[in-house]
Length: 173
Image (cartoon, rainbow, N blue to C red; front, side, top):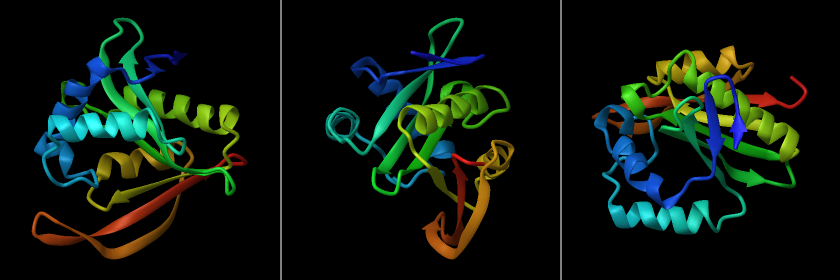
């Protein structure tokens, strides 16, 4: 386990799948994710078996509270490109309807950044978010990520177009 001040990152286990699926299926959270439809048990299991366990270009972690060991969310490095030394940065807190808060999510994000830069020797971490995702739009700059670009009206959701924002942080930042 990788321990921070408030949270720890550990491997995702089969027992984590149902809580993670429940959080991802909450409409208030689902609007922030690429998957717009409800995630079935079968689809969640396929994700675990094909991506979490078998895809060398994805490293996913369960986020848990240090003091209790309670599962509270997930984070990971996806679409890892070993030649360019880059990865997509993914994170959310599902417990207590938080999504992104002021303590747990930044603590987990700092652990994931250190893991990506120091353990995986990555040079660039990037994230694509929707323009209405105010919690992440505030968190990323606070973590030293730079807003690198905006794709106008690139995603259709909830009956309207929204822009996609691209943030990144380099190992040298």
